[in-house]
Image 1 (cartoon, rainbow, N blue to C red):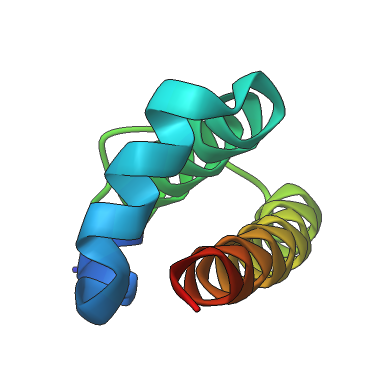
Image 2: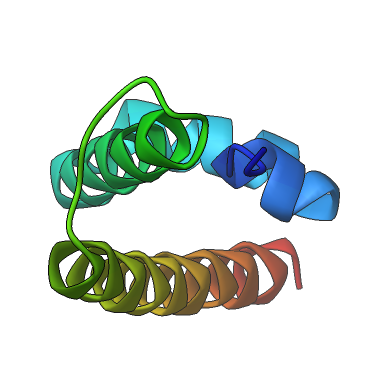
Length: 87
């Protein structure tokens, strides 16, 4: 059985920032939704609820990593901006 990847579970220390970014940034929200969709598709296939060939699964895994990296970078920029504004 595969593990479902939820952005807030992947980055629990950034849960509040994730929520804030989803509310304020349409691009972040779109990427987060895409990340969730890719994760759900992989999870369903790994649990046997869907059929997926290995090549497609590998492509989705690469897409998931890229999205996660992009989202994490956006979250770090958001945190830096918040810290700078607080100074």
